[in-house]
Image (cartoon, rainbow, N blue to C red; front, top):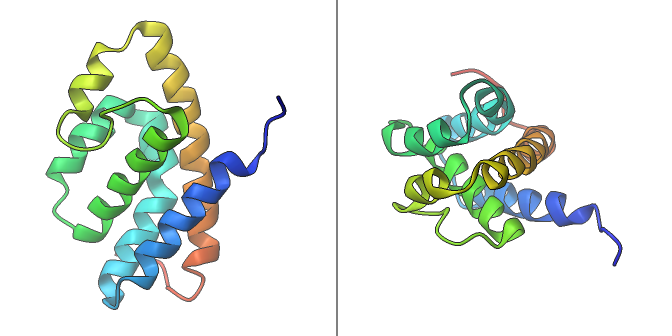
Length: 129
């Protein structure tokens, strides 16, 4: 079986494109773009469990939407159930060390795709808070 590099890029592009086209609020679009660009840095600094916990604490709806889409992509690509929604943190906590580290590695690759595609999908949105 060969690996198709679009396995990661395609769902990320589609998630961001759908978020952008469903939103008309300029401030929310900026939040979405900024969060998508910052995902990799946040994840590499704080880790996946912290990102999942932060999902509930985010007060900016645009940022929250991107984090939710991130976990949807991660769940769809890996096939690991319950990463999306309220059980996600519990699911991450209960993974074995090897599973968690592997998932984090893949999660970082997905976060890189979010950053890349954010600049393409949101090309007409200026950055800033």
